[in-house]
Image (tube, rainbow, N blue to C red; front, side, top):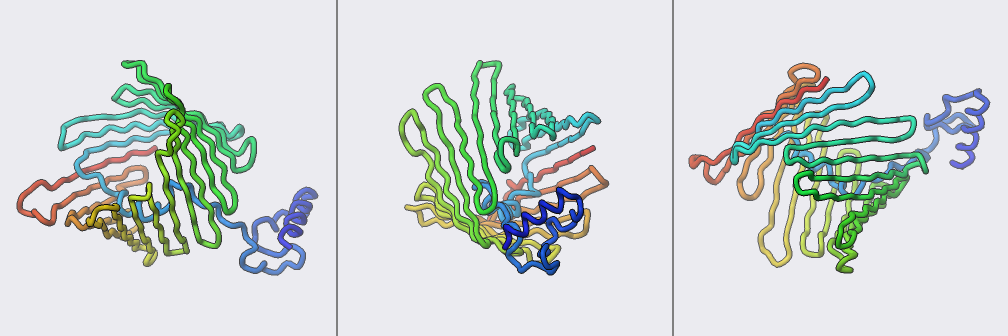
Length: 323
């Protein structure tokens, strides 16, 4: 039935008689709402993005121990510039990078160049949805002028309904390393596998599995890395302002179970508060405030709950400008 509906929509578009029928969730032949399930199944995320909602609760909005400034601008020709500078308050080491990005949308090409204070130059060229819908090809190279060290990585990815696969070839003088991953999704269930194979040693260096479930306001993620690292996370969107997450991890051969609880609360449209605590009694707090459009301030702190009076706590501040 769905195939017949799709053919009719295309025919109407070609004649120009009825283009509003596209993506409206209506049955074209009878003009009634199509039953639930006729819509396109969402493309599953990449393996690295499984459990991302829970990871963001624990990682975003924090920057303790670092003073950071980010500046993002865009020229009239469409070239994007991103400059970042940071200082580690513990070591006193400062660093930064400059990044430029240019997109040729009509050709599906993106050019990205980056330079950092470690004097490493990287260039990435990607092409998406040109040879086939959902296919992405990329070439990532890096060069260190001081040492002459060079590296390159060929990236491929393909995604469509129910599947998201990727394969990267990391070139090395001794022999390339193959990184591959695949994620299957059906009715909210997600299953993924990730591997890395060293061709020089003919050895499997990474062997990871993941299983999860994703609903509208709830996500469950579990994974096993190399048969020794076990982890799981739960994410829930309590309401429009409140998000929570729980993370558990355990290593085979060890009785030490690591866990953490985190939450994010949207105070208003311009301010949010994040907090987290783990089994080591380390408490993280972050506050993000949009001072005006394009100007964002982030304040964060890490408190050692076992040694509140002993010092050693960390604070951080980030300032982001975008024009």
